[in-house]
Every structure is written in C-alpha cells, then in structure tokens.
Image (cartoon, rainbow, N blue to C red; front, side, top):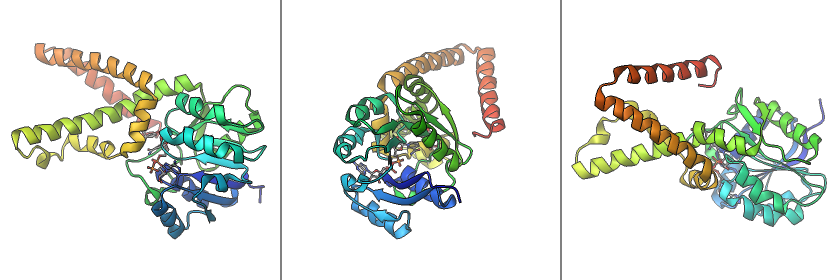
Length: 295
Ligand SMILES: NC(=O)c1ccc[n+]([C@@H]2O[C@H](COP(=O)([O-])OP(=O)(O)OC[C@H]3O[C@@H](n4cnc5c(N)ncnc54)[C@H](O)[C@@H]3O)[C@@H](O)[C@H]2O)c1
Ligand SMILES: O=C(O)C(=O)C[C@]1(C(=O)O)C=C[C@H](O)C=C1
C-alpha cells in the first residue's frame, strides 16, 4: 500500500464538513495514519466519538496539533484568527496547515500572520455541502466529483500545495487553483448571493404571513420550497461568510438588484420578449450544470 499522505492529521471542527472529511477518509483507508478530531463543543466531540469518526479526540486544539504533520481548520471562518493564534506556537516544523473556509481573502488575512516559519499554509475550499450542520451531518461521498479550489499563497512550498491537492483528489474531488480575490468574487455570485436571497425571501414570506395573518407558509410546497432548503443553513457559518466576503457580496448584490429591477420593469410594461429571453437563458444555465454533472 502507498505511504499515507499524513501520519497525524487533525481536523479542528467536526461539523458537516469535518465529519464529511472523516467519513471520506474511511472510504479511502490508508490516506492518513491517524485522524485526530478536535472541537470546542463537548457534545460534538462526544458525538464524533460515538460515530467513530476518528482515532483520537482532543478538545484542546493546541494539544491536538502537537506532533501533527497536517491540520485542517473546519470551523466557521470567523473563528479562524483566534484558532490560528492559539495553535501557531504548537504547530510542528514542516507541517501543513490548511482549511475548508468558504471565503479565502479573509482566511489568508486572518491566518497567515500567525503561521510560523517552516509551516506551510495552503488555503482550500471544497465546493460541496448541504444545509445541515454538526457531526451527524457528515456525508462520506460529499466531495465525489465536486471541485476543491485552492488559493495558494506566493512563496509557499509547492510540495505542500501538491499534497493538499492530492488529499482532495483522493477524497474524490477535482482540484483547481486560483487567486483568493477571484475565488471570493466567483463564490459571491454562485454561493453567497443565492444564500442571501434565500434567507431574505423566507423572511419576507414570514413577515407577510404575520402581517396578513394568513397561512402563506401552509401553501408553500411550490417554488418557494427550493429556497427553504438553502435557507435552513447554519446561522453562524453564514453570518461569518457574509461579513468576511462583504465587498464581493455587496458588488454582486448591487448587480443583481439592477437586473431584478429590469425584470420588474419588463413585467410592469408587459415586455414579454425581455421576460422570455431571461427565462430561456436561465434554463440554459440549468441544462449546462446538469450536462457537466454539477447540478
Ligand atoms: N456547510 C457547507 O455547505 C460548507 C461547504 C464548504 C465549506 N464550508 C466551510 O466549512 C467550515 C465549517 O462549516 P460546517 O458546515 O462544517 O459548519 P458546522 O456548523 O456543521 O461545524 C462547525 C464545527 O466547528 C466547531 N467549532 C466552532 N468554533 C470552534 C472553535 N473555535 N474551535 C473548535 N471548534 C469550533 C463547532 O462546534 C462545529 O462542530 C466553514 O468555514 C464553512 O465556511 C461549509
Ligand atoms: O448546497 C448547499 O446547501 C450549500 O450550501 C453548499 C455550498 C454552496 O453554496 O453551494 C455552500 C457553501 C460552500 O462554501 C460551498 C457549497
């Protein structure tokens, strides 16, 4: 059997993504020699133990990372700075620090200043997930056929970046590299804005139900239902994503608002060609996603 990629890999945060990595590692035995799980929530750590997600369970992240050759931050992005500051003095020389955060400029801003000399920091983002959270939400084949985007930092050891690529490829993902700013703009339109819209539309429908005292939500098994799936996502994770990708998210929101206004105007003035054209373009996007197996 090939050498393991990591002898002691630590996952800090055993929620949806951490537990999915742990599950995927079980589907690909031999990828790591020892998987250590760390989480500040004692219930989550206990549940991870009951589910048998790792080989060792250590609440204190500074103790967990000692002697590790790999560490992956799997907590909400707003917690990264505090964790990085705490674990930095305990990271082993030659080890690799990576993450799964949904924003990348903020992660580099918050983590890099603490990374000691001799440790390679390789930011990464698996583009897969669901609306569920916590250790029970792990999905072992979550990354199968999905993208994992890496935003390598200039001057960081190329072997470390290749190792993280190999790690994600072993778990079934396809990898690509891009700049952190580009990543954040792309994610703002394909992931962060859709969540902002879903949270908003659910709030609007709920307000309406309150105001009119009518059962708006009783009859919601319609197009609205699809918005409620993503709107059921974790509040802390998404709060952190929004405030840590503020500029790109607001830029995309502003473009979206203009386009939504244009659509509303077409509705008002009965511009059926405009309406039909927009819907045709949207259907094409859906068909393309199905064709490239990303739907
Ligand atoms: N959910 C998704 O669809 C998705 C997809 C890709 C990437 N991500 C990214 O993955 C990361 C984790 O998201 P998730 O969906 O797994 O969230 P989650 O809420 O399911 O899990 C987060 C875990 O981190 C733990 N945690 C929080 N603060 C901590 C701290 N300071 N120290 C140790 N543990 C701590 C929590 O107890 C919890 O177990 C986020 O950065 C998110 O942006 C999420
Ligand atoms: O499918 C979902 O429910 C997700 O929210 C997954 C999703 C996305 O927006 O596509 C969410 C956050 C990410 O960082 C990556 C993937």
